[in-house]
Length: 258
Image (cartoon, rainbow, N blue to C red; front, side, top):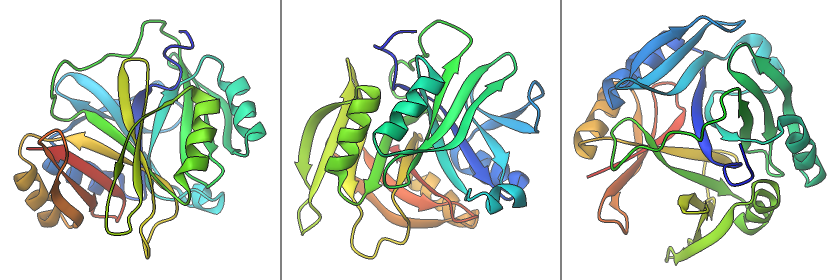
């Protein structure tokens, strides 16, 4: 691994109090299948898009709740040195939520919280090859990473110093919504940052967009499965559309498609 790949998103995990209900919901809405992973210390279920693993789901236990964890999606980004990077996050105003931990046969990770409390996992896999990159629009894969914050400018400085993310194109959202600032690294556009709208019900957090074939049909499946549509569908500049949702347990996620 090199500094060129550090900061790229590679894995996505859902922490939920009801793993069976969550797997049913996302299987029906997104089309993921699941596969148990038996190499760790705790039960773990892998999300798969076709034959490719894209993430996993873990139980939010009472013990984790007492430690401050909450139900949410969070992502893993590549790190050259997990422990050193976590300490750098602290020096930049972040905190360490989970110290460096080994996953047998897989790699090492540490979960950090940025200065506003949004969490991200730093991950160094045992393998050395770069993360796979889907060719073209691939249903079931995550395609965009969005940070809703209170003052995105400070957050972008934090992540730029930590992971080398670069400022890209910015858009005026209009109607007093402020700026939507995109970011990326190298030849990859990774996501965007914006300020939380007035009255937004969640604290600063990351929102992850998964691609689906038919956005309208997937949106209907969200509602049928007990979830809610929070915003959209609405068009985006590339000619596709997005929708922001809560799953059946109220966890925020988003979808992109036609």
